[in-house]
Image (cartoon, rainbow, N blue to C red; front, top):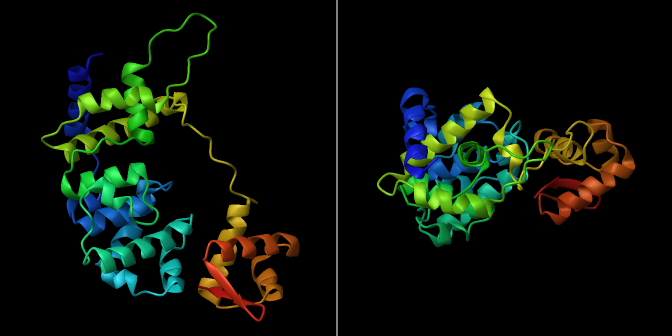
Length: 274
């Protein structure tokens, strides 16, 4: 397939089956940034309700920057990966303090914000300001691998993993520089649709990692402790163990990790959200 054919397929799908989300319908730079933090490792269907509530409560970087972390974590509860909530509040503080409350326009400046990496910086710039960034995430990988790397392989031979370095030249060539925002909406929607209609093409990506089991994991225990501190208030280790049902030896590891990550702090043996 050539690039023009690829672009045509992607846009045709978007015209017929493009998805609608509140952060696409009511585009503001702050709303885009909030959505990208929430969408990291969380499905779009779950994010929409949280995004609407979040934007009503904290409609600007300045309003979130002033919020206590305990309150932020309560509002985030249910989205998982609570470190994202802390990073989002810290990003709001940087935007309020160093950028006069305006979300930076370029990927380079966005990378200065806590929790913003190569993908997020490109996506935020693109969706907030129609900036012609090129970036990669799982749906984009699915679209490109399906269209350009699905050829036959010798019988019995495994298909080789596809690295992002092989995808980037195609994405740079395919980019619609007149409307990069619409192009990336279409590209991500096409990739998401492919994953529902066939075996996920992104599994052939060299970057593909199967998510570890959540039940009984350290991540689950960490979330229980944060939820307890945010909703039920400060506590010592015995009370935390009672609230969460986490064994003492595991609980020591959890609170130590949360202290090192500056999510929680202790004074006289009592732990609280920082």
